[in-house]
Image (cartoon, rainbow, N blue to C red; front, side, top):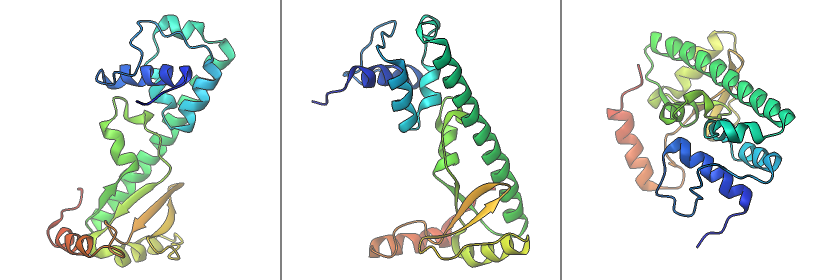
Length: 198
């Protein structure tokens, strides 16, 4: 059986509340959280990319138990996460418009795309925007360069560029085609039959 520190149990309790994941039996189901070290909880939540989500799980009596300077730090950190999300969302929307207007199919991968499954999408932390352009990888790179944007093609998995202040990775492949024959076959079928997000 897994064992967790008191701080980890408190963090998991907050996440369970937000995600309504009552099947996690090892998480404390206490009505009011009794966290002994809020500073450690904030650090652990930040390290796992769930700082904003964890704050959603707090009840008012718990929030009031947190020292004022930590509440301010936590709130400001969440506002930064929300701001980054808005910037990424705006960049993605503009990129999607540009790509689609030029007849290229585009699939959004991981990151900001997964945020739609979170109770509060802007609380999903992501670093960059990952896209897949099916058979138009090179065409997409050229299109970006035509906008006066430098494209770094040195990566073996993807090219990279900055769009509206956000890093974008244009993936050459959707699956691990370099090492797996089955993935190559599967990806060929996806490229033939797949549809881009419009």
